[in-house]
Each structure stands twice: as C-alpha cells, then as structure tokens.
Image (cartoon, rainbow, N blue to C red; front, side):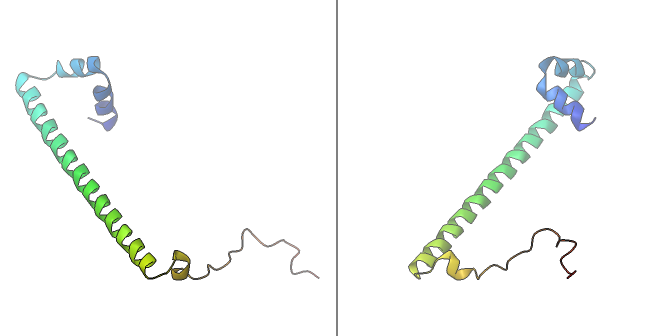
Length: 96
C-alpha cells in the first residue's frame, strides 16, 4: 500500500470504511494494534524532539547570558565578514 493511499484513507472516513470491508476482523484488530504502536512511537519521537529543542533553547539562553555578563556582543565574537562578489564580472572588464 502506498503512502498516497494511506493518506487518502486517513483523510476520508468513507474511503477507510471501504478499505476495511476488504479485511477480516482479525486483520482489522492487527491493523489497529500496529497503528496504535505507530502512534505511540510517533508521540515518543515528538516528545523527544521537543525536549531536545527545549534543551537547546536553555543552552542558547545561558550562552547569551554569559556573553552579556562578559560585556560582549555578538559582533565582538563574529569577525568582519568577507565581502562577496555577486554575479559574474562584466565581459569587457579586462579590455582596456
């Protein structure tokens, strides 16, 4: 089954019912178990991602605070950026 058909089933209850009619009760129960496990795993992954983002935000706040306590700014940490040339030089630039 393709991801497109799964998305179609998930979006439309009638499509899901039609697909379910093709399965036995045993298969439907197994499918419900698998989907339950997938949902649980996805929730765990989302929770882990949120915790990682919160940790990153805390670390970033600590770093900003340390920079401010030291009397520095971000410009002090980042040197002057090299100037970039944009585009190609004109065709007649070397002809004189």
